[in-house]
Image 1 (cartoon, one colour):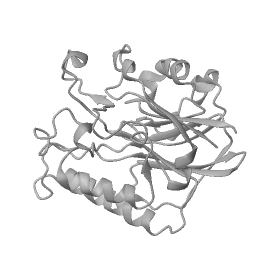
Image 2 (cartoon, helix red, strand yellow; image 1 turned 180 degrees about the vertical axis):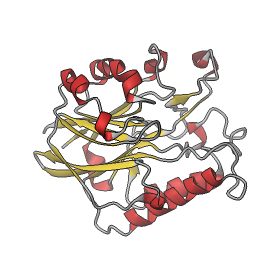
Image 3 (spheres, helix red, strand yellow; image 1 turned 180 degrees about the horizontal axis):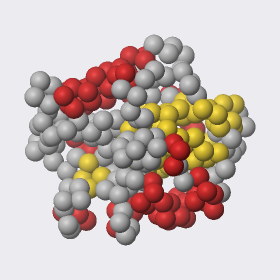
Length: 268
């Protein structure tokens, strides 16, 4: 049965870090790469510069300086245009595609959830309110899609939901990305139709991170990370899951992102 490797990475500027995609491809050998924070408007998307990577099927949605998502694929795909404009902002935080696989189509969603600012108070910090509204909208939309199957959701969801998805559950309870309101919202979204494909392989009592702050110079020694980057699959794909990888060494790449790539392999 054919295998499919799907990788997700918040690249934190595609044009700045495009040269690092070679390393990602060499390390993970993905069939599909989902990128977030591409920070490039569609008319300037570097399609020619990406051509040597040999991902002939590409879809993207971007804007100048902020946000932006893209999917690079060796598997034929088509843009999936059924999702709404989340929170009515038109801010390029989601792109979906249908992948053509031997056993039938796979629906793939690539998200970049709002970071939410620094203050976990909706009244004081509108960015936090936007984040909570965003994940509430996505939960309701997916919950309404009864019978959702053969679907994958990936991306920088900007929330570390489990106690061991952060370096200190107690100290980060009032830090945006691990507050109870965010965790409840993300958990409800996942339960609207998905399972956590990475935690399928790594028990919840084990520490697991995909992001380390730029502010921490000796990030590996202190290891104060958070798991902000996720891959979910619909329950029908659970038996197809084969392996997962978090490319921690990518945090040391020259001019690297503060996020590292996450990858899941499955039989399709």
